[in-house]
Amino acid sequence: MLVDSHCHLNFPEFSSDLEAVIARAQENGVGTMLTINTKLSESKEIQDIADLYSFVFCTVGVHPHEASQYVGGYEGDVLFSKIKSYAQHPKVVGIGETGLDYYYNNSPREDQISSFSDHIRASIDLDLPLIIHTRDADEDTITCLKEVGNDKAKGVFHCFSGSAELAQRALDLGFYISFSGILTFKNADPLRQIAQNTPVNRILVETDAPFLAPVPYRGKRNEPAFVRCTAELLASIKGLSYSEIEKETTNNFFSLFPKARLSL
Image 1 (cartoon, one colour):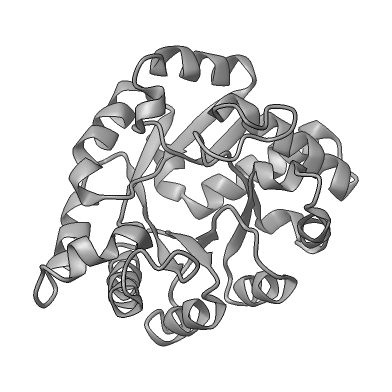
Image 2 (cartoon, one colour):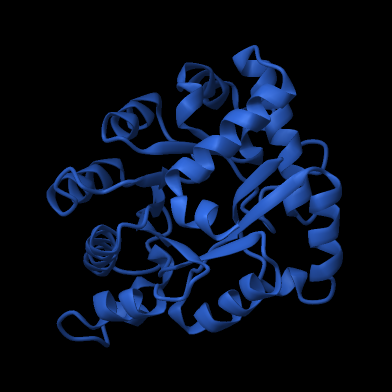
């Protein structure tokens, strides 16, 4: 069994054929999916999807692009409290996606840092892992994890496309690294080198569907079934069989997300 550790099943790209998408994933050996929250306003619809399928789990969180919508209008610990409240749902197994994105800066940096800090604190209080999005914000991301997390934060750097230095710093903090279809892209040699150097017991695979479809599906809508392409390439990079990488990444997922394991 393979796990798609990061997808967005509530996005409009799947509104007309979600059942068929999930069926294709299962046909390709994807036995578990984690559908990721990016806006608290979408929490219920995400949780409803997870409730429909025993093997689909979900998260609660605010993407850094949306941070200003939830920080600017709130006072005190309201965002922190709302995250903790939504996380009481039995299918919520992680906190995020959260983090910092200074490439687009869709929200002011101070709002992103405030939101990220609330997510870190909530994840520690709830003992649930963080799903981290970071782009062009390496130093502030690591600083927040160290200063707010105080060596207690855990989680995964999702859809990793950063530097070898960032990967090592994430690993040093005890985090996992998740590789997406980007790993298959023609110009991704530096990322493939990072994958080769990352311990196999700290790797997850994902699609980030409906985005970033891997080769040979580039340009098409991505879906959980395609995570197999990333896993197959990862096996080759690591010098392992497909069954070995399947077993390792699945075990890693359930080690990081024990609430999912207990709920199956």
